Length: 327
Image (cartoon, helix red, strand yellow):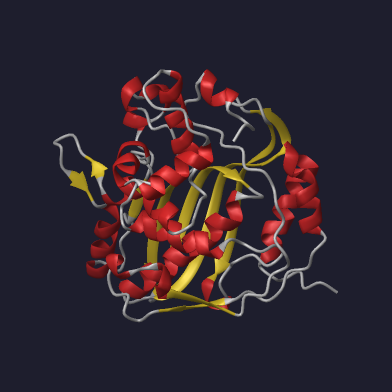
């Protein structure tokens, strides 16, 4: 009999609820269909194992490098591309292609564009940046005076001096740069999805709650769980606490119409024992963390299940929409 107490069943049961009850929606930008529920939550006790899902293999290398990219305050994809992590390739290329259509840049296929990012630092500086995304918002929030605010360092400093703090929040949602609220030339072209997290320390344990306003349950959420659970471990260590819970709270949680068969395949699998993480004790400050700092131990998942990514959200132009499926 399957162990229904395994924490991964929270995720699997949400998958099933979405298949059974999800309400049809259509993305205004790309026109793809999703099936959605609103307001759900998963909770993982990090003392009971690291919640890297086992019913399909999760891209751990991508988790490590992306989190380091965020924590170091970067917003240019060159760091990821140089380290063979390509999960952020689509959005800069789509912005670049708009410049091509306007006659402002040479026409390159996406593969050529990414190769150019890797090989040409000047090109990468000009075309590889995604301003106002997570790393910049976490570490270099733009203030009205022109200074920047390091939110992530502030919460670490706050928790070190006040173990009862209720205000340890990092926010990535800045209306000044989002959607029609932004000036056209300043609009963030990437949709901020996991938009806020809060840290709490209680009884010597540090817990993190993420609010994710929009969540792709099949492709994105397993990755997000692993990323923020790892962030919880890192923040616990550098603030002198034990790991508590990672709590994942969703606004709109959904699956894409072309993910149905993949979801059904995953639901046929039984979870295995969660792995554990060995975090380098030399990580004492935010900037000490590097991908090599976290060792994944005893991860034995079921095979990966492939599915197509739909780069939806943000301010989508006609050219952006027409690129769907071409690259």
